[in-house]
Image 1 (cartoon, rainbow, N blue to C red):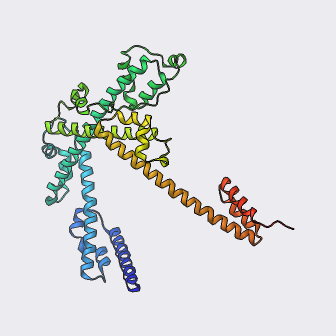
Image 2 (cartoon, rainbow, N blue to C red):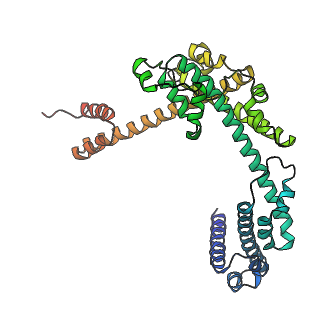
Image 3 (tube, one colour):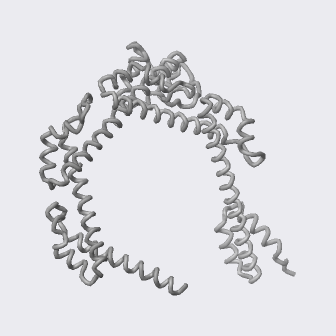
Length: 372
């Protein structure tokens, strides 16, 4: 055991030594492609590897080389992306757009020839991902506005100014006025007067997700607003955007349903029965789960049961730890009282919560013999 401990300690010392050597060498190097090509001849690197076994020295040189290369590649990609013009939404081949972009080519000219093709491919991949993310975000925003219009029309019909505010607050500030004007068909609505004349419905703040049992695929394919966004995209990009948007919607609907079910189950006592039995017997939780598609309902219910079981376990652990702490405090207080050290006993009690201090103090004082 002692030999193993010494070996582990030696390994830690060697690792710390290498890290210190690497840091000193790195401080002497200029992150440039020229420096990278001649890194083994650098005075700072030669000083760092001096005295090391050859294989260890080579590993240190490789680590320094990899670190500088990663930094150079990242900087070149950032510069190229900054100089690249706006992505042509209808472009079928972003690699061709990258090759034709003068700003990108100026950046790549500073890169060694044997690395340019690789960097160009990485930049194309970044742009393709960026286009998917950007178009997906636009689709999601269009669907949120679409759902906001439905909810706003309902809230306007109910003269519920508070709910109108809740809906608008969930939209980007830049689009709130336009969406509200569409919901009111351009007619003037005095929300201050509505607040004064009509009480709030008291409904919880709505989200801007489609109703749980809605066919999300149908919403995406049937929405004119979504069509306007994806219409000009290449077919493969359009497919990826719609698939990603649907996956994100499904995940958000599932997450929102789980949160609602957790709120509904918040007052339940899972200690009286198994969590699954408790959930199925509660009307509020049942209503939340019943609004979900069958496959999503099973998933949300299993997650909710797991959450309750985890909470029950955590509560039991907390209760056990609390009991142990009280036992220790009571034993220490008894020892202090037995020794006549009332100052220490009071100090122990003051570190407890008031209710715990009272209970422990009463138990200790009850065992203190009364003075004759």
